[in-house]
Image 1 (tube, rainbow, N blue to C red):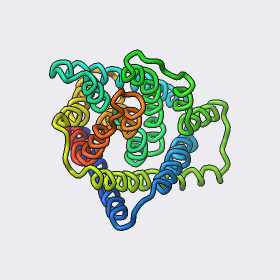
Image 2 (image 1 turned 30 degrees about the horizontal axis):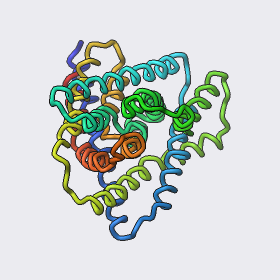
Image 3 (image 1 turned 90 degrees about the horizontal axis):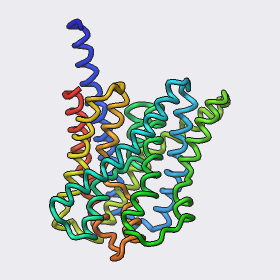
Length: 328
């Protein structure tokens, strides 16, 4: 390897870290704007529902389709899609086991232990991860991040719900209804159309490109509105064991992911994508799952963890990216 090659690689690493840091900074500013807007103007539940519908049913599917439409979908990309799906399943099952073992060491009370394990193991790879990956890695990054998140859904609505319910009856119909969603349909339709050689018209390409641009800013504005509401209701106080999910989710799991990936022959792009997705804050669906499937119906633990992990991730994601650049 020549000196020039080494210098080019160092420049590339610096650009990657700078790009991630810039993207996270922009994300933080938009979240702050969302909090400011919600502080000035009361945000109703209907407004939040509309934002969620636009983000999940229009913007995120558009990121997926834009990734397919603007990419030469060859056998290599299909192999990457399958590979990232399998990596995600292994990653999330491993993260659950890792968090469960550490929780056992600290002997947390049974119900609390379940909450902490789920909050520590599962990240917001959909709502935050997909728009962030599309911003950093381009259309293909958004597509692969969506596939990574689809695998999380599979683990979530099977293993995680069974873990939370502790043997009580689980409705197959409700699981299937939750699993079949618009982003997953977009992945299926997009990859199928690419495999059969369907060439989308210029109108469809331009439409999905414009709509994909809505995902990141709308998602960050919504999170800012959500955080302002959470702090208004619950204050800035935290429960005593919050250090556990924050430390494991934002630091321990990304560090373990880096260590494991360093021994694999994956490309640098795939490694960086998985590392960034592994560093996402706690997933927002946890509050709904706790209220639905836990005996105490407690969602406050999830709500507080979501708030603090999201804010802290603005610092930890650039740090993890920098560390990965140094590591690899």
